[in-house]
Amino acid sequence: MAVSSERIAIVFCLALLVCIADGQLSPMFYRKTCPNLQTVVRSAMTQAVNNEPRMGASILRMFFHDCFFSQGCDGSILLDDTATFTGEKNAGPNANSVRGYDVIDTIKSNVEAACPGIVSCADIVALAARDGVVLLGGPSWTVKLGRRDATTASQSAANTNLPAPGSSLSQLKTAFANKNLNARDLTALSGAHTIGQARCVNFRSHIYNDANIDASFASQTQQNCPSSGGDNTLAPLDLQTPTAFDNAYYQNLVAQKGLLHSDQELFNNGTQDALVRQYSTNAAAFSRDFAAAMVKMGNISPLTGSQGEIRLDCKKVN
Image 1 (tube, rainbow, N blue to C red):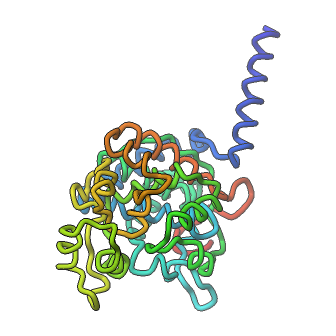
Image 2 (image 1 turned 180 degrees about the horizontal axis):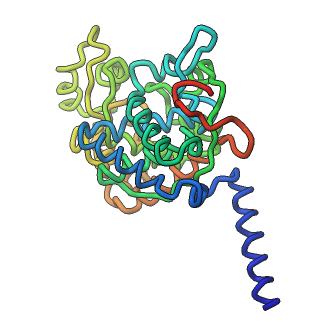
Image 3 (image 1 turned 90 degrees about the vertical axis):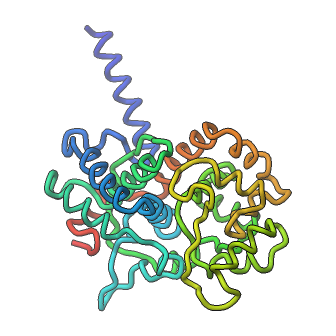
């Protein structure tokens, strides 16, 4: 019996150390307090993606912007502006770009009905992003949970932390390194552009001015993105399979058909060319690295323990 108890104690201590090292996040965080959480989130996301496949990309983008470009994975991107509070929704990278807030509100309402006051909005976004990818045919991963919601937001951080669509590979690497993400993470996470759409204003310079672009692709894209005007006209980031999460994005890059300048920088006689080629022919390698990078990104500066709060309404602090 003594040996068995000792082993249990060792396992518990190791598990505790893992949780502490990981910012106290754990996939089992709501096991007792909200056991049906993932079923509730998946059900709502299934309905949302069935209604509009693009929504899978939109929620993934929201999670990326929440984690990467503001204060961390803390749901700060969800907060509305008030007379005394300026949130992140209208920051340059988010305005007219991030969407799906209504879907998160619906999921939160459903979760509150099942487990009132228990689950953070930040964790709901993390789960919804994973489910959106899976519903569009992409990989799954274990989402670590236990994030708490921010009571503040930083529009200035959201405005300054985002690498622009015209960024060089060096600038992209630096931005990701600042979040403890390496060049492999950068290349894998950029594969999120296998789904979703971009506005003309963000790719106009690439299709009119850059040399590292397939001429016929540039000409075709220019049909719906004039050299001036039409800033909000949309084009699929992946022309081949815009609503399927696959490795076609990397095939596009190899063919010099990346929509954004920053996309094509990953395959432009630089350090990431070999990895892009690998992903373009090995979907399993891309899926594996993407899932691992999403877990790493989800660990960016979470609020845990007694930090922050559990918002009852994702749009406003309690």
